[in-house]
Image (cartoon, rainbow, N blue to C red; front, side, top):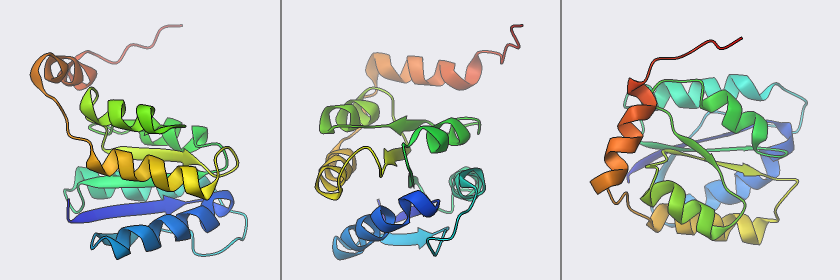
Length: 150
C-alpha cells in the first residue's frame, strides 16, 4: 500500500490529522482530500472526492472520518467498487479487510478516542483479503442488480 487518501468533515478534522501523521510516519504517502479546518462543512463532498480517486486508481485505499462515521460510510458505499467499512474496534477492521476486502475505513471521531482509532487503523492496514469463498461474495456486491424496492 503506497498511496492512501484521507478525508473528513469538521467533526473528524482533528482525528484525521492524527491519523494522517501516523500514516506519514509509517512511510505511507497520503493524499488529504479535506477538510482543512474546523469550519462546518458537508461530509458527502469529501467522501465523493476520495471515492473517485479510488475508482480512478489514483489511490488504492482511503480513510474517512466524521462525527459518527455513519454519514461517511453511507456516502462512500454509494460508489461502485467502494467497500467502506465503519469500524469501532480492531476485530471489525481485520474482518472488513480479510472477509470483505474493504478499501475504505470509516471512523467516528465522537465515538472512539484517538488511541483506539490508531489501533483500528493499524489492524486494518495490516490485514489482507483472504480471497477464496470471500471473493465470490465480494464480487456479488457489484454484480447483483441495484433494486429500487418501494
